[in-house]
Length: 392
Ligand code: SF4
Image 1: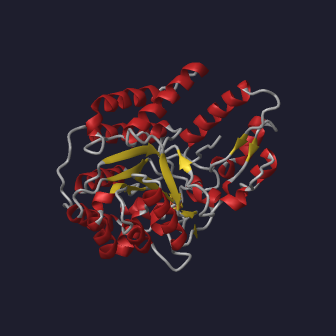
Image 2: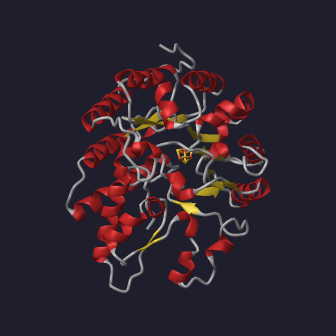
Image 3: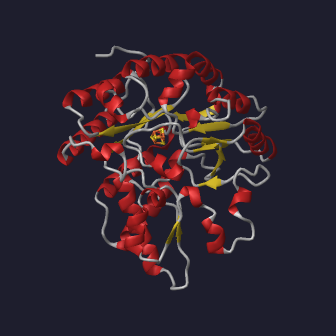
């Protein structure tokens, strides 16, 4: 089982699912848990499941070889361009807070699915305690997410893994602890892999996967612009999902990156730029590496130069010390630049992160209130394709 540990909601749900798995498994069944959670909360997993499971953090995947007595070791698969590209089940998440909060033209062709999603989100915010009911809901979530996110004829999106880890040090993030420093796969290998997919296998869509896609290449003397140009130039009909792209790279590569995205906007399924907050004070405390004015300038310019490029974002409410004014800055950022959809979630302490030691935590009731306000706002109406707008 692969488990997400990004926030507390994800951890709680992963542990509930794992408990069900352990309860139903035969005594001789080997259960390994991979993903970020074993790197973030290994002690909780060990205490809770006392020897019944094997937690395998991302930097120790070789442990799987012994556990399953593998004929092909994991080290010969990772980064091996001759192996089939890994298949991931898209962006299915175990956290109810990660259900996107706003659908506009990206998915509007599926209005029944949109309704289903709203129903699911409500249901998930009151997670059923009964195991079977819970399992049923989760499987429905997966089905609907597949419907919404993916081409119906292609329920599995191939993933092109371009890097692991990241260059960031965001104060709320535990993923960095689990995945470590940036390790990029050489450009020639990635392009060969992409050619194999799009030219030989005739795939029409693939996701570029990295801890922070925008950081690609910083450790090997390359960069995201070279990566995107190299892939987009492949002579085939395909689209890329560009996920988890810290906006600081959009700012750093500015005109060049916007030029590439504008030229190839027809080849981008969507670009995910998680801005997290619209307040300079909070962005600084988060250590996000960019400012509000830069977001307005560069995302606004991207809106204007690539009007057909769907951009999504993540917003975190209730970060420690977030005042009403800080929150209002986030709200006004969402009015000023155009996102096709946003995922809004509440801040929660993650073990060992600097933010978890900040003393001025936002009360849970205020976090809930802000979450509700933003979700309500995101569901009401649709903003015009405004691009850069006033900072007020
Ligand atoms: S860029 Fe920040 S939020 Fe993203 S994985 Fe790295 S440290 Fe975490």
